[in-house]
Length: 85
Image (tube, rainbow, N blue to C red; front, top):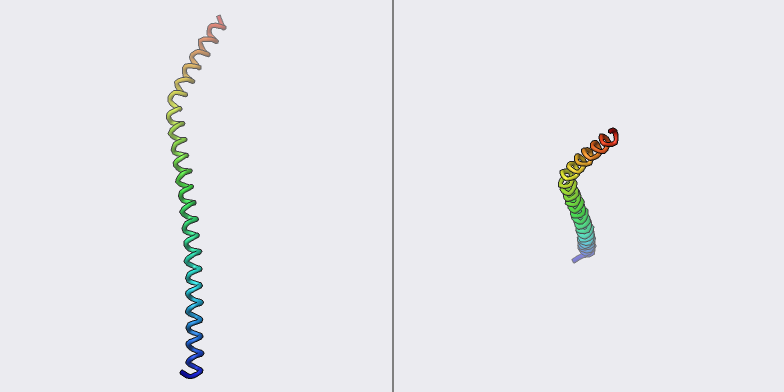
């Protein structure tokens, strides 16, 4: 091999090793970003589940609360009527 061929081999091997190192770094960063996005998605799902649960609780409580309010209104009306006599 002459000197020009040796220089070309060194340049090509250097560029390939640099490309390999950059590729590995990019893959590691992409992996970390994907893991971060997965954690954010899981937290979002938990928030949605909690909101759904809270909605169920309020929905279940709405029926008894409206009945309680109706009874309270009747009792207050009766008390006002008794005081008026």
